[in-house]
Image (cartoon, rainbow, N blue to C red; front, side, top):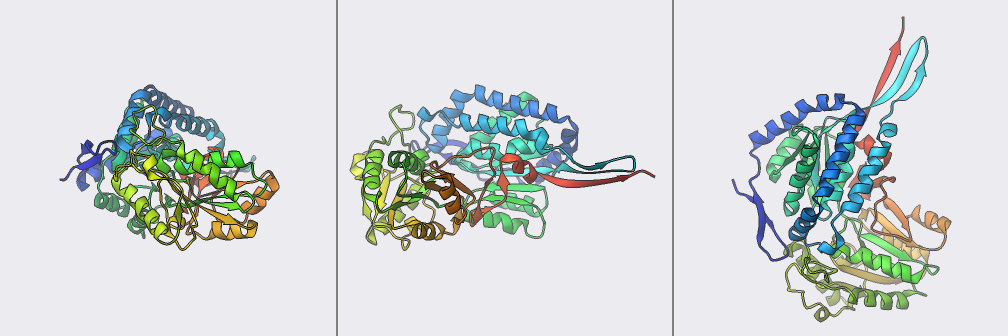
Length: 459
């Protein structure tokens, strides 16, 4: 069997390799997860919560190791310290609301009847996690799934395969049984065979639209519920009443942080004509202040993309847009670390249109197009001219205006004066080709449980 290799974007070396499971071994693994589920669900909720919290505490104790490994695996500069802020905040929130979110709903409790609706764990939850925020995206489902009484099988992206190993190490050391949380290395055919064979009771996938389509095809006819977070092309809209400096700082950070490799990163910006010139000028200065370099260099604010092939997609979109009349505002020579490989200079494009792929197809890299708009109506039309719908960022001084515009945007989350952020109290969801389902908030518990009704009568 051919090993799965993790090629580091830092220097192109093989950083890790693992043999994928055979189909027989994978089926045995899934059977072990199923056998472990009911005993795990029978433990008191408080005990499950405490074990999960201890697992995250163990992960925090590995911070230095985790941050270094992240840089080697997917290129994020070590200066940003990994993903621990979000991991801890989301874990704490989901643990804090668990008792309320999972509480039964009593309809009647009398001498004649006891009628109520309970939430019951689905069974075995399968998480297929991506590489761009490898801890955060896993935590979104892992925490509520375990707390709710499910067992979990995690298949991480090959680009960040060590993330699953660290999570398993931390959670097993906390006392969570090995069969309750399993980290596995699987190839695509084995993954699809397990899903088609009803090995899992819920599949959560974060990745590309094509990947989501493959998951749906594998699950066809099994009635296995799916949570799918797929592509995105998130817009920002800067109205005439926006705080210009705040908009530039947040939207440029949303476009460039993590080398643009963010599920809810800003990929296209529409600016009211009265602020357009100033916005563009300030944005160029903001991006030119970045430093592209080795992620272990403390001066680097922008690391390599996770793989050369991802950078090639961005280069191709950018070159095509320029050939169609777009104007690049960032001189690549100002970023000498751009090596034509995984290290890619950031770029701002103007004179762009929706005839260009860079404004309509997911880029997932450090490039953003900026367009001038006349009014809200034009901005809304352009924001909705997309097959995706994850988040939209609206810049205004008025709550009611933002809410009214947000009601007309086809998206999962509406932001006012912020971007590229997940609030664990709000449901993380999308529409159109971005996928279906939701995580975080109390609804995140609904994704990994099912309602079960009890109608008890005395005679």
